[in-house]
Image (cartoon, rainbow, N blue to C red):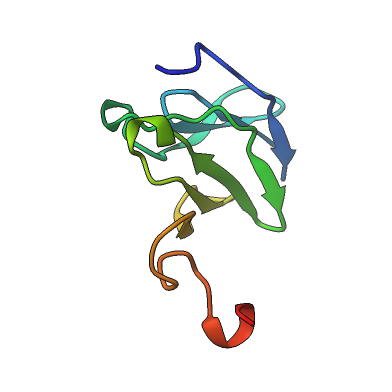
Length: 109
């Protein structure tokens, strides 16, 4: 891994603690019991994808990213439903507008 075993913090929402592991696994724990509620594999470390960010809670979504540009990885953000861990959307940092979730009619001048 490029960046050592970095952890930039946790997130809390809906009675759950969210931990983004460097191996790209997003782990959700019950805040009272510590039991795993759900996990999501957010990337593939074998491709050079890593996570060194803290997850963020917005409404009923937890948002996290993928890094690894120094290994040719295309960065992205993904939103997961807090309740069940299903991916709600994914947006890339570079590429076609539709993969960056940009609407040229609304976001370009």
